[in-house]
Length: 316
Image (cartoon, rainbow, N blue to C red; front, side, top):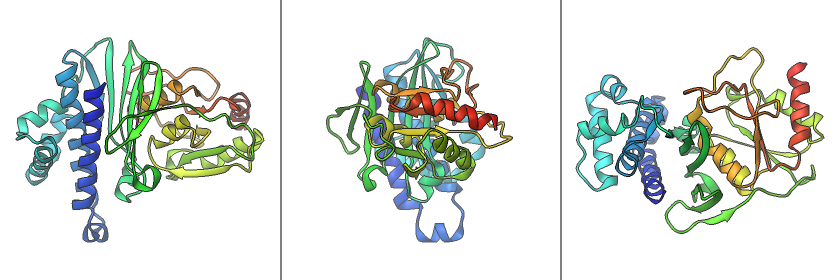
């Protein structure tokens, strides 16, 4: 996984360059944020797919962006900007043909090993310079096996790289260096438990999640709100203990597998518990979307009673 870890670090470097150069005060005032997101999305995915192509040429890839979208939807100036940034980060001349080939690597292919990429998870967090993630999950025969999540906003912007290896999970400095093995916390008292949930309201029902915590005897726990798959990473490393994603009433939203695969791997490999809302398994074998309505991730200490509470809330 070393080559992929290096690629994720390079993708994070590109995203930070985009924030520094394209999220200027003028851009924020104008309110047009489409350009920096486009540049970072395509650039980040291209870097990761390039590494996968070099290291795992026969593998499959499921990712948000495609070469056709890049050519059709990105203006010539934007395509040139992405190529220039990739040339800078990768330290090699990058052509448009290179970029399209990297973006499309492994797409539409069936293979025992499938990589699931979210080049920028938490778009609004990226634009607001809060929390966002660059994520790459690994499926083996349709089951989550491993994952890498870079979190540039972790620890007040210090950043971290979370990854799995040989059935364990690790956290390393985003800037480089060895990882230290991490495990979920052992906290079980309501006085100590920390819950995380999405910053944005439309991602999940905050009222339902508050009600579920109350029914589970966790109504007074500390709740942190942040964007992206970093929430999974916080549970995996013991910085948090509970993450629920309950659908809003009447919502038929289908979760994309790239929003969850890498984070699920982190929690599982660090000893945590992650299930559907009814306590069953998450199903990553159905293509780009999960058939599950929501999920619960925890350190395991209070998982059973949270599942029971969630079932009561969903039935109300």
